[in-house]
Image (cartoon, rainbow, N blue to C red):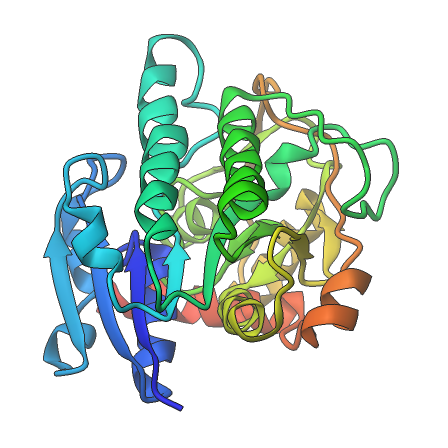
Length: 316
């Protein structure tokens, strides 16, 4: 069944992959993006290359805070809210206003517009494992108390709560997906795997914050995209779901894998741990498996090879 969809943040890493999957599955997609300067616009334009050739995709360049959201939401069966100001380390100090505007206020205005929609079946909000902070236990399940340790995490949790409030008070069908470190082709240039691979290819030292023994649960992009579609079809309104890849390993282990993939030894330099970075993350995805039918299909070595090949190929 073909759906009419709205994807916010459509030119970003996850948003562009999601739009492509929706179009390939036969859905009509309106994408909105304001092309913030968090990283260079040409990268985002490149993300949209194939989509711009597809009649089923329409791009609107606008800020959610200024767009005619009721008109955009009207008639849409599925809304995928990917737009956000990214970055844990950049969310402190004077820049926090950017996070409250783009992550909290923009979400509230989108939910306000969704209140009046008669066609909406589900709004899927892109949250983050950052809401957990330094969790009490690993793997971490959705009932554990969120304790974010960065302003970014606070902003993502606040938007989650807004989704729950609008579901409870106005019956807006909304669910939140807590992504655990998504990676793969088109990953943002500031993210660790992109930085590591680029440094290897350039013959530069890889910079690691801390001792490299911190662990992350890494989720490949195609698994994150699949989770969005499953949430739209089977999610229970008002709920939150962990989306993890089942690949919880140390940063040092990641670098060793990249050395094997690249066929060369890396030089590593260590820097002080950054404020807002957590020591470990690990997703308990039993709820997502049970209620959504979610299953992580790409292991960390496969996914790293795909990202490595994409970055290397983009330089040719």
